[in-house]
Image (cartoon, rainbow, N blue to C red; front, top):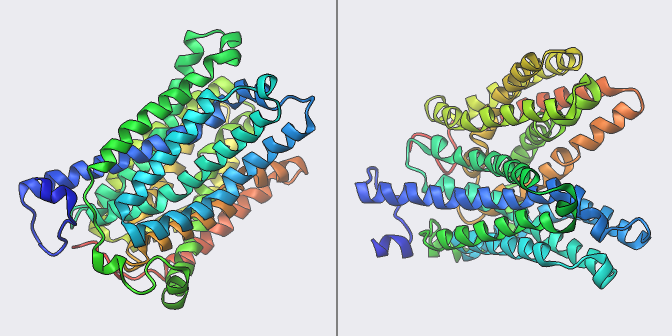
Length: 439
């Protein structure tokens, strides 16, 4: 058993022993649990900010207010591509396991710093400055999490079931967001608002740090999926190798991920605000609708991943982009005028079902495009850049267009990006170039 854990698992055999199957499934669980923790810790900041912001960013301090703005921008936009590059390089040159262990350790450290950090009243401008650095640290970590985890889960998954097992990356990504909501709600039920603003907001960060420690030790038991040969290959984990020999693959992945990130954020993080600001529902009703939608979205991932094992990743992507292009405009238009929460739930769940054709295979369809020596870098960097430019900006674009009276332009913007995603999906090979869905 020990030899399987500390050495690279062989990829040459067509069949697996029962012991090897157990180790691979355990590795999927360990890797995806770390992914859940990473996203839980990242989302907790957003959900708790309303309580701790006055303690770190008082209106009386223009410098602190500026740091607040810079921190949100830096963590959401700048640090993700940097994290995608840094951890992709580590994964391709030092190993997937090293990259994933380092990533979750950094997230743990960031959460622990935030949980223990004194406020502005005690240490002055150092409080928002240290909070900013902790948040940037977390942004760097989560920016590197996607590419390495997607690569690892694609490589460790059982042949013939790679789509099914790889889909658990988004199960835990969405699960991290839902778990963050539940922890915050539980804290709100147990403590008064005064207690939450005074010290209670720190508890979710403590929970995040503790769970990250558990994930750290789980990931330390993982076996490595890359080999010494690929890690030592000339150009392994370098931008030069990626763009010299795999530029077309990178552009293809970037092209369809741009639209995919946009529609994902449109029907997840932005949709709650849309239900309140445009549809006119109460915040509580919108929260209940989106919690239900996200739960259904989470549990449907394995089914769509398994579908890709039967019909191929390319067909999954064409169905995603084609249906997204055809249905986004009418769905958003109808939701805008809907009055029934049940109807809104069904419409949003339908759109998330369409998105599931992509999210369930998001990691594996990218991993299949790159050879092992630049796989984590190619997957992570393409995703991070597209996510930062199109996914992270979705809410700002939507609200900006609404503020000038052109909200429907956003519907067309998402639709056009889905058409572009469809065109780039046409460039996908019927079987992955380096990891075949039937192997």
